[in-house]
Image 1 (tube, rainbow, N blue to C red):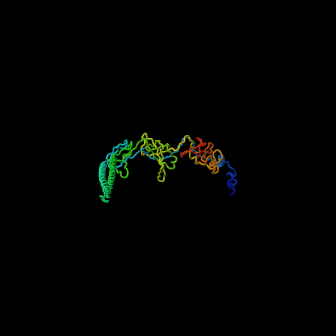
Image 2: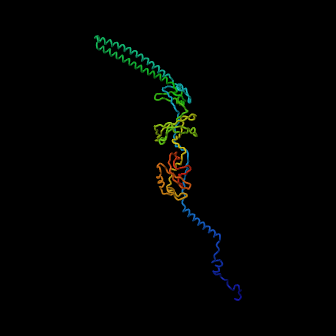
Amino acid sequence: MTDEIPERISAAPRVPTPQDVARRIGAGRRAPFPRWAIALISVVAVGAIGGGVWASRNAMKPKLTQYETGEVTQGRLEVTISATGTLSAVGAVEVGSEVSGKIQKVLVEENARVTKGQVLAEIDPMQLSSEVAQTSAQYAASRASIAQAEATALEAHLARERAEEQAKLGLIAKKDLETARAADARAQASVLSAKANASLTSTAASTARWKLGRTKIIAPIDGIVLARLVEPGQVVQASFQTPVLFRLADDLTKLELEVDIDEADVGRAKEGQHATFQVDAWPDKQFPSKLKTILNEAKTTNGVVTYSAVLSVDNAALTLRPGMTASATIVTEALDNAILVPSAAFRFAPVSAGPTRGGPPMPFFGGGPPGASSAAANALKDPRNKLLWVLEDSGQLRSVEVHPEATDGQKTAVTGEMKPGMRVALDTLEAQ
């Protein structure tokens, strides 16, 4: 039976060895590397090398110090004082009543032009007329009393003379002589008393007539009525103070502005200085004026000491009115064609800045030791001078010695080496 088995199954199939498997899958051979991967790796490598070099150079490069600057200019500088006050009329007077009584008539209105001696109002004169009649009668009675006392005195004097002659002849007693002398003396005293009483009644009569004349309120000046403070039928009392009935102004074409100047500024204010002021009625207009006088008496309000100053104002156009509140600016000093630098430059002192553009750190600024700028300031030619710092085109700072003359707070006029167009350092900006 063995001989009958077919030949295809007579031999068993061959089992693959490990070497065959390795050759089949390509084990042991190096596969080719893609070209795009090689190029990518090359770009990354070059970038890394370049970035490292750039970072290294920037790490070694010094930071650049920058400055805020201001320009030096040439022009007019005005040093001013600010103050506020109120406009008032020149030669304004208040007209009042010197006697008490009821207002009978008011003969003028506000803004009316009046002349000196013109009657403005009248007070009822009836009561004062009665006083005049009464005092006049009393004066007449006192004059009669004088005549009576003089007659009595004459009689007593004659009686005394007779008594003295009789006493010489021994016809009367000594006591009777003394009585006659005393009667004569009393008669003379009665005359003096009557004359004194007549003087009193005469004065009372004159006062009554004076009061009667004051029942007519008259204008003391030529001018214009600013205010009328009384109406017909109103009763005025002049017992303790004179009641004001009218306010008159001499001339409204000339006004005065009284302002309060702070004690810190009053030393710079001088008579004759020019000034300008504004009022709320004309906010876009500047009115000229001139400082007329400064009062010596101080005023203290809430602990603040001020001095009153009077400015003269030309109001020919009658644009301004008394009582307006004004804000004045007084020019205490003016310089034409002055070299002007920003005042902030005097507060700048670069003591520890970094290297400046265009070169290594410079002494006293841009990397110098702290306090070096103070040493430079101590080397000034004049102790009254100041040291400013000019930024040149190269980016470096240069110190310039100047003499400050005047300032308005924003700009300062200087003399020295400063020229228009220069740029002075005001502050140090963040280094970049």
